[in-house]
Length: 103
Image (cartoon, rainbow, N blue to C red):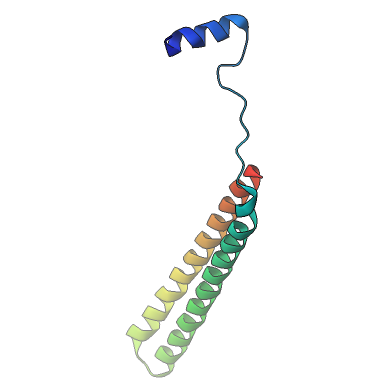
């Protein structure tokens, strides 16, 4: 029997075309997956903060020793670290939100 015929038969009877399904991770994966996601996000944010601190150090050293290129690289590093931290935070929140919907 064709799928089109089955779908029209179900629609004629008033039944749902798409069967009821609730997505769920297996119980053995729920704990480790959440732990891995949390540690990955925390490590990424810690590295972004470290990158920002190194950038500020480069700015300070560059200005005090009159090396403009070092100072400008430090300023770029600060911007990149800020963008990376925001990206990691937003991505982590989205992943954990979708992960929470599956539970």
